[in-house]
Length: 77
Image (tube, rainbow, N blue to C red; front, side, top):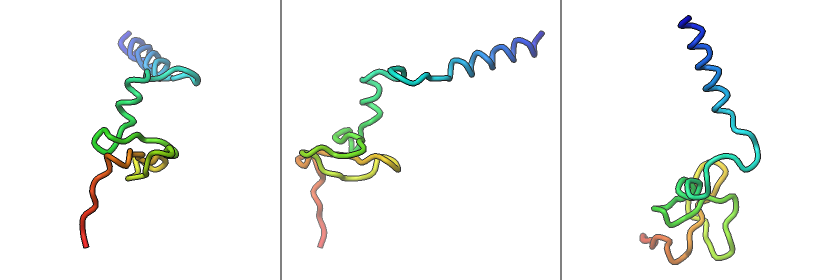
């Protein structure tokens, strides 16, 4: 009986973890919170907008796009 309930629990977890394509997934507020970069001033995008500059990489495919006014000041020789 115990193995049957464990198997049923695993089947339910597998079915709940499936996310169908389309408009499913996290809402816009959660997506925006996790898509920020550079101290919450930038946004992770595949391509920066005209009024933004690339600063660092978010991961392997997205760029951290930051408004030039919020870019760090470069110092050095």
